[in-house]
Length: 439
Image (tube, rainbow, N blue to C red; front, top):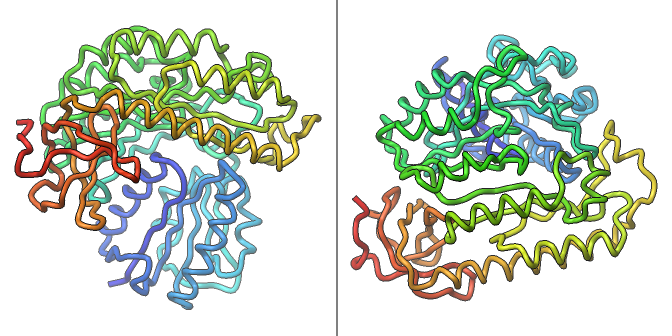
């Protein structure tokens, strides 16, 4: 029985796909093991959103060959689609599979025999038209359920359309079938994931269903306590969807809405499909219906042409908005994007300074959001994440909490009162013996 190990870089969608591919291996009789357990085969699922992700891929290949010098190393994922020939020349890589080929890995590499040269299976991205359903299982407390893939947007900074192809979705009927399968396990929370999930519903190049129809259908699935929506574009987050979540017993009050810039001039230059006024409208609508809702935002700093005034406009906009945390990205040039050809390049030193400012703002925002919720009662899903005698979990509105370790609490949802914020910025709750079951 050959041993296979997996390593995933990047987003929740990559985790869902890695987990599904790992189950395909297990069904064929392979033994899934940890990365350090001398595997015969390494499957590395890559990301290419930032330059750092590319460097990480190369480092992981080196580590794999240290662990198993004769091990077979296959690279899949976004980086593999964008730069297959470049990856094939990395010492230690035995195969590279693109977006249209990664789910055919077992078919294309049935022998997994190391050859003199790396094998490359990477069609043009136009060939990636099929939707491959995927969801994670037994990897984390939550399950990531893939509902959409690809993107029809053309943001100036982004390589995702080149790496994953055009927007396409699973049918609601098939997603419900996967959800029913998940409901038969002990999973308590499902996170809906994709590249641009608000664009859900395109099948065979035509729009046949809508995102609101999907979440309304999933809300009727019994056996799953929570559904969480991953990142969704502000122009695709409708008032109808916000209102539905506010009234749902299963969809949790948490939205992650990419902003990228608080300057309309920069949003236009980035090729975004909204202006700051629409973003503010969405945030205000959410907070009106769900004052306790957690709202996260993505921000890019140092985009070509971003002046000090543009940046301060972004900072002030975020500072006044009731968002709960920020994911801050320092702009990095990506080949084959419009932004890479733009003038007015922002020096890296200034990019880094701006990133630090926004990360400090994010910490203040998160702290303020946590403080607003102290003394209130929420439901926490506890995870198998133990540190120094304490275990971690998340409330429905995405507040990270800690409680004294009790193995009985793992993967259980408990009603708790948030008591204080500890020195690590995590909210502590009453002792486990005082926790009241949410059921």
